[in-house]
Image (cartoon, rainbow, N blue to C red; front, top):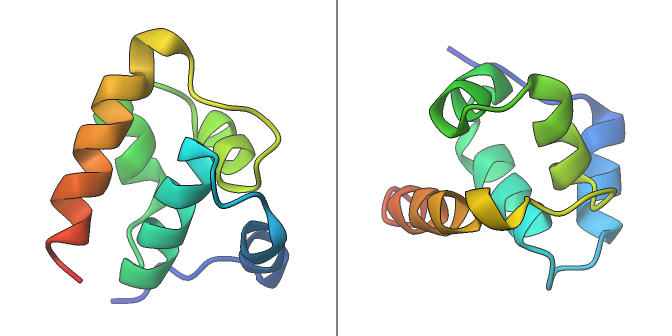
Length: 79
């Protein structure tokens, strides 16, 4: 099943600053077609927050950074 990401999100993620943690998370999730709802549920934030991280508009709050880093590492192993 494909959850797909809008062309807009994919495009904005592709040109966003790759040094940002949320952008890195976005690239992994887009590559693996992980649903935003699943990521949001896992991290305890809203889907809109996830989208904002993916495009580099905001960074994960300090209280979330370790969980985001752990999720990226877990997902990277699936690539």
